[in-house]
Length: 390
Image 1: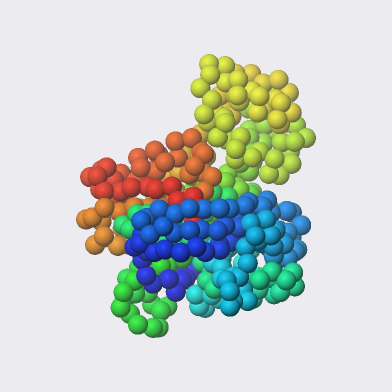
Image 2: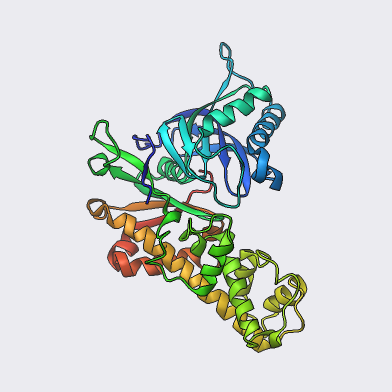
């Protein structure tokens, strides 16, 4: 794993105060926020969310960011403080970067469907700052962190015993506090702790450990980042629906599903959204009416039988259950790397659409974690915390 030092070396106490501008660039949305820390583990948030356009994902991301920040400043009448030319800003950047300082980091690669040219290998803060200058936006990025680091710090402000931050959403990643004596890449002072960005979506890119199927391999072969982020492709929201689609089409080809018939929609890549999985898994009606609606109305399949619908629900259940088990295994492995902390209470800050919306995701995380961490620790000292504003 990349295991990238983040230069974040002080845990929040919950007593910090002040008002700050923040950007959060994720796989689907850009959030522009004004955050006010109250000094009592609580905070107030004014935010505006912008859906990232396909054009921005493909070519003009940095200008898109600058334009959105400009809109936010204008609509909320935000200006630099007297005596300053710019507004200081923290940037949560949810793509792999090689951090070279608290306010600098070079983009390692794109994922989550982004392909913006002339960006990989370059400093994302410089690229953002240049766009701000082009659009006359009076903002200066003074810190850049990965989204998992933002999740970790947000949870840590409200719950100081937070040890990990995790994203289970469009993509996946994690960050955790590590003793600097154990960080071989860190050449500075070895006293204290530092947040490490695991970039765990890249686990097992050699495909020698994880339980890959033909359906995972098909997705991987056809993806824009073939051979990369293979763990992410097994558990995250951008890809789970596509794994299900591959499995369903295999059953269709074997004439085991839908009488061997498909539809033009289902035959296209990434048309089986992971949100459909959530609806299908949650359907408990005797005749699986929700499943029928998704298949026949949304995906335009011919009339389905109850056996068809049960088979589709089983496929979604199996692939979803595999995803949450792999998620729990990774979380437990990181916690077990700091066994000295497990005698006390430990919080894990988590954000992302899979954690928030996939049926029983949190419950299943706890259940599977008992296998690795023991029932005593999970039931009495482990707390999973939603940290959605990281």
